[in-house]
Structure formats: structure tokens, C-alpha cells
Length: 163
Image 1 (cartoon, rainbow, N blue to C red):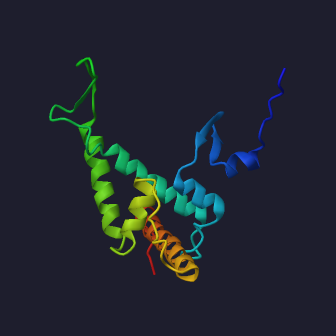
Image 2 (cartoon, rainbow, N blue to C red):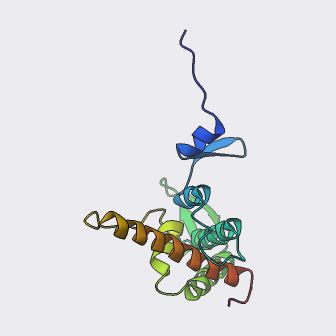
Image 3 (cartoon, helix red, strand yellow):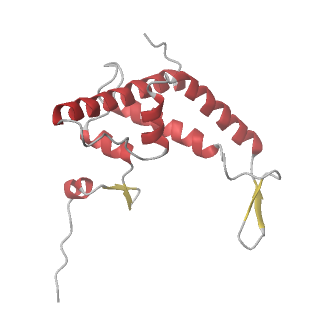
């Protein structure tokens, strides 16, 4: 009988998976960045955990907004056309208000990277024609812009004055 090899926690993380509540999940790009230490480029008074919590709150507001899934009646329909329980429209409206208010806090130059990483789970591509040094500088700039955008979200969600 073939013996199965189990991977340890470090190898699991290296492969892009994380264990939460007894289950194994594929890491999001944001989780991968946090594991690599790339969420530590912003304001030194905020930690990578603060940035991660702010990003998750931003994701939550976006997901709770149901931008493409709510019909006029305020109910979801199954494929067999039976309706599920009505959706709490007030909660959706509150989530949308929070989402739009959070978007306003992020400067325009940081918004593309914050939106791509936090909401779309994708990296912004860097042109392969660039030289290695230019590429590494652009990657550093993207990480820094992401952290600075997340710093603004921390200030917004936790009502901290930003200097």
C-alpha cells in the first residue's frame, strides 16, 4: 500500500493554502501578501494585522452591498424560480454607504491597486519589457501604494486622524 505524505504548516502556506476553523482554504492574494510581509510598507503606527483587518472590512462592505445580485423585489431567485427569504435592504444600503464612503477615503493614485488586490483578488501586471531594476521598483511602489491605501481605510474604519 502506498504511504501518503502529509505536508506541514510551512509547506501548506508556501503552496498558498491556509487552515481556518478546521478547514483548508486557498489563500487570497491579500493573505499571501500578509504572509510575505508585504503589508508592512505604510505608516509605522499601523501593523500588517491592522491593514489586513481594514481590507477584510472593505471586502465585507463590498460583498454585503450585493451590487449585481439584488433585484427590484429585494429577493434572490433560485434557478427553479423559487424565492429565498427576502434580503435585508437596510443592511445592503448601509453596506453601500460604508463602501462608497471608504472609496472616497482612498486617494485616486492608490485606488487601482487596493481595488485589484482586495476586491478582485488579482495582481496588477508589470510590463515584461522593463529592466529588472525598473520592475523591482514598480513592484515596491505597488506594495507601498497598497499599504498607503489600506492605511487610509484604517483611518476611516477606526476613525483615526491621519497625519
